[in-house]
Image (cartoon, rainbow, N blue to C red):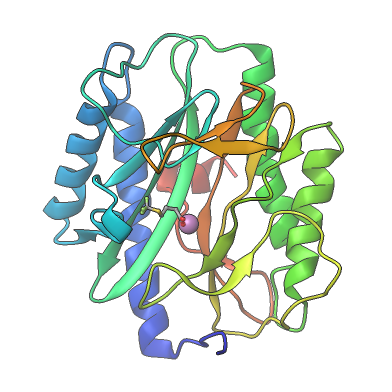
Length: 257
Ligand code: MF3
Ligand code: CO
């Protein structure tokens, strides 16, 4: 049981898996509109992934029935696309997806607003994204995993948000989920030491209210206990001696950074 360190050839494939997923995220974000069903979002995403000669890695993962998780408002993660669920003005929608390129996985999530969203919702989306960037300041060789978890959680909690403790990020590579688990809040243990060549999916899931969640009867959809909004932001990253390489940033995001 150990965290895999990827060699140069594997890293090249991870980079490409990340770049292609970022492209799908960017293109899909432009397709989102009011009135669209979540099933339609999934259909478009799957087509985009297959057009790139990649495989959607969520599809059939432990029986998951779609290529994307579409989670709206108080849905935290793993919302199953559905023909009768319609994107509505004011909704916040998290799109979580991944793909396999030449045997290597990428995984990323973004939360988007549909039409005009509340100030509260906008701030939650921005601060969830920022919590990721706070965390990865510590994502470098020689640091410990808990430095990342702690920075994410401390930042989010400073706004009174509830950091979801029942779900975690993960290592990623030739499998979607590898060691280690990556909590989004400070642990009592410093955790494993980070090494150059590790690839991680870091994914803060942050609730505007309390941190507690429950699972819907579908066995997948996770919702906030108190009905408060929840946002999700995830990238696949590569640990280096210096700043981490974020493998799943879109071209548009790189320009606006
Ligand atoms: N990004 C999520 C994760 O890392 C989704 C995987 S679960 C799936 O856990 F079944 F939807 F694929
Ligand atoms: Co993930």
